Image (cartoon, rainbow, N blue to C red; front, side, top):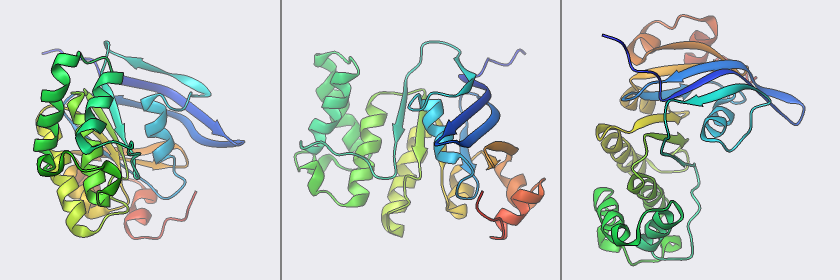
Length: 234
């Protein structure tokens, strides 16, 4: 059986920001149907990689190749909330992404239902708690039915209860077939959510391995030091 081509293939990506090489010849294939967590010390290039894959940062060298016309979305650590109701935040995102008007209301309502925000759909988005805002950001993304969803530290500023709710939503999105690629500093969260770990150091991929293997027996000195909390910033 011939394996399907990757949804997104990154080849020899180099990104230089402010004279510093944030990514250094990094290559990565993103296949459908997996949940990838990107780990690494501060400064390893995790957020830069996500933003480059999503198209927010242009690589200084290297290529990004999509297998076909694609749908993608990204959720940040601190999502931007429009001065609108929760449901209007979702319908606006659908509008700017070209979803026909006749579909928007139903898709927005469904997305809010799935993240547990239907009872507060008419509440101003900026009046929501941090955890509710992050679930709303996930609802906006989910309503777009992306093939790949990039998540940059989605629970970094949340308490444990709100983090658990966000993790539940991420798992549900993945279960519907969306490819998840996320960064986190929480190793427990990586264990719970990942199928595989991509470990970065100094802008390069040092390891890519199933999650259980990574935590049981990391293959590199850098990853071993990272798991012990002894890897210095890059």
